[in-house]
Length: 76
Image (tube, rainbow, N blue to C red; front, side, top):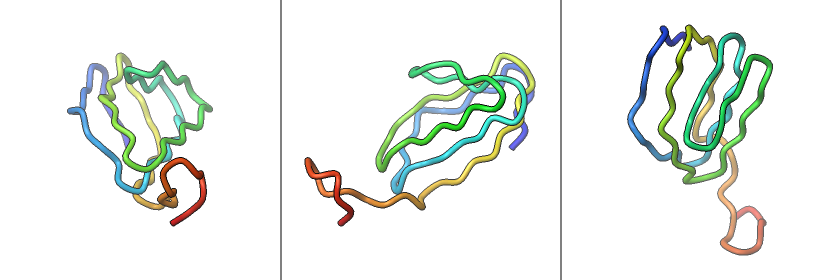
């Protein structure tokens, strides 16, 4: 995905998780700042409010991570 400078996205949840690879620029959310060459893996039902301050290019895949049994770390 390409986001222009100043792009913001609403708070949202990821059933099945999400993975992001930052190709260029910097991806930002309430959990941190992720520069180019950073891989972010968010678990099932993770929530975030992402934005960028500069032009940013990133790869994203959602909904493909295993759902885990609460408290066990084991797939359902």
